[in-house]
Image 1: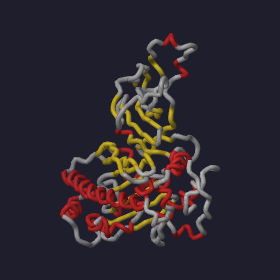
Image 2: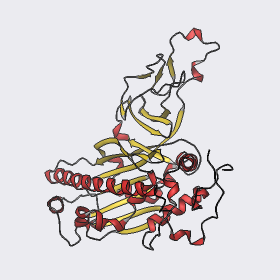
Image 3: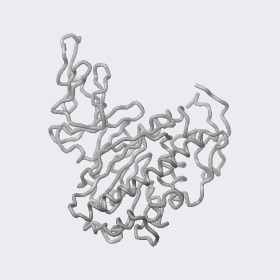
Image 4: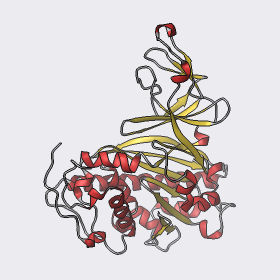
Length: 386
């Protein structure tokens, strides 16, 4: 492992500077993030209504860890490592699917019940002192809140309820638990460090310049707050301003949602939770997004959309227009974050100034420096004693 002399730690004014560029492209730093940021964190896998029947499952992968959540015959949802206990073969492939009663390894045929118990072993007598009870699927901590299913790779720390407490009342208000899949969970590659994706999410200064369609919808009405550790952004879709055809039609067609109070009927909200989970909360639907690191400069954008059952033509049209507007926003954001990642490799850039209004970026940088003190170094330090 390459090392260099440890430089001076950033001065007290570090709160006014972004995280150093080296942390957005360094493999050693990603190793630290794996251990100190991602393994102890709760990770959203899917909604319970994505896996409604016994045998339904969804997968989640993170930096070498392979996980699944599966609904059992008893209706319970459990989390397991997606790894055979015989020779470590991956058991299930893809984002999700259905197992008809058991999970069978394609390598040697070992099979497991939906509760993780080992149920079948070809040539079982060949294994000395073998007990099936010792070789069931390895469990992963799994919990549910507001309809969403989460896992945690390293137990301990805050409960899932505590983690989601900053947004729990709003989740109940929008009736998250009752929502059904609108767009299935999907994964797409982005050529960025995961932090560039989450930084962009709480950067409101770029909206006017880089998102003309979205800015037409909300017209500079973005308001940022930090509540109990969660970043929240609010925007009014009826703010005065011009509108593209999609924006104008969305405004005109969006019907009232009986379960929402008046101040939420025309409000778009965005929530970001540590380290890389985001919710886009609209009157008509809800999306979640995650940036999952694959390497220092490559990430998976994982997302899905959910909505309450509503057969009104106006609501169906509004949801279509919402997705059309946001597809364009996603294309614009993909270009932006990949531009930033390219620049992070330049010898001319060490870090950048943070404005007083960039509270989301400041908040995230502060948490990263607390979780991994090496992030305070302007130049990569030696990791010999990490």
